[in-house]
Length: 260
Image (cartoon, rainbow, N blue to C red; front, top):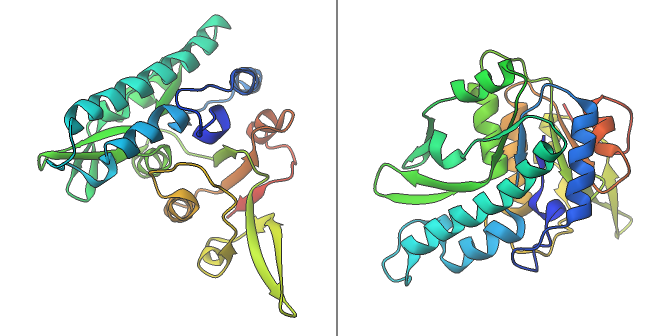
């Protein structure tokens, strides 16, 4: 499950946490008590700093203090992640932070995994592994950002000891909204059921207006395609709605977008 950074924080206010939303999400995950890998986005802790130092584009000597900014961004994400981990531990639920920057490395365009075993072993021990959007170092002497969505893609490709039944994205909307033209009139409606091949045909309505250094809605669609290519279904839900996170984890019927 991916908890979006915009869901958990106010992206327009640096270093802000929507504490009631986090508390509700944590309790629903605990109540569901499913075998789960949790990923969360950067939100107001990651995106503003990553944008300030242009981290997505790699090393650039013309940007003042960029290397320092790289480490500041990582530490900011650690701080946010620690807050989330503590919410679980205060409820006596075992959760373990796993830094993406420690288990993934880039080699130009390719991402390699240094150790997927730590995640699978945590699952074996009934520990909830929590990963998050982070910096990623490049063996060619540079760096970039690995988004929560990209982490999910890599996990879907590389986890072998567990079958991934589905991927859930919890965002602030009911799912994917698409544009449809009818008699010269533009309608925007929720797509409740989609097939993988539909993603290249539909026109997505971008309802976001926040800072995003990881590709926005187009980037998310691209990652969803890669997940579906692994024969893993995707569900996009509204994480603000009452018990929707719990119901999605329990495969109960809710308003959402399902992609097969």
